[in-house]
Length: 142
Image 1 (cartoon, rainbow, N blue to C red):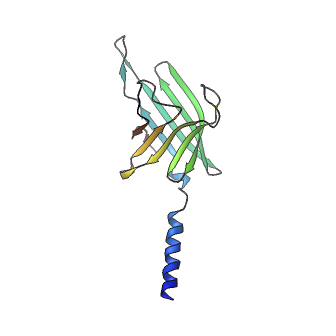
Image 2: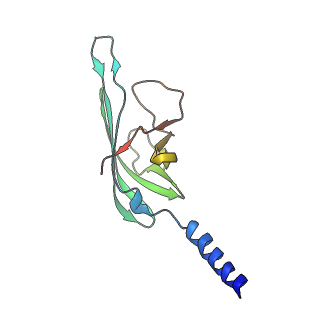
Image 3: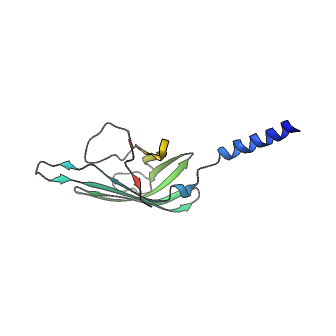
């Protein structure tokens, strides 16, 4: 009987650890301010990203991504698709040379609640970088 109770408890623990990530965890606003770059004309170029994830439906979270800065303004309808502890940001738009459902970038939480961004179609715009990921680029503001 004790062994059976042990199996039941072990099974319950295994099932609860395999649950999907709560989509509400990702809901909110995120900001990313690229490091300013000095232009030839002796001024600093800036680029700001604002990601809003605000409505939930069918295990997806919907919102918008605004990129604003040096001769740039993009307003992209997006959705986030959850896969375990990762959130993949995909395009709903077909504007700005993007395909519908194209992966723009991915979020995941690392140790100590560090938000890791893995770049895909979209990458920082001011400085060419060979880095495929970035820790704490985006900050959740609410």
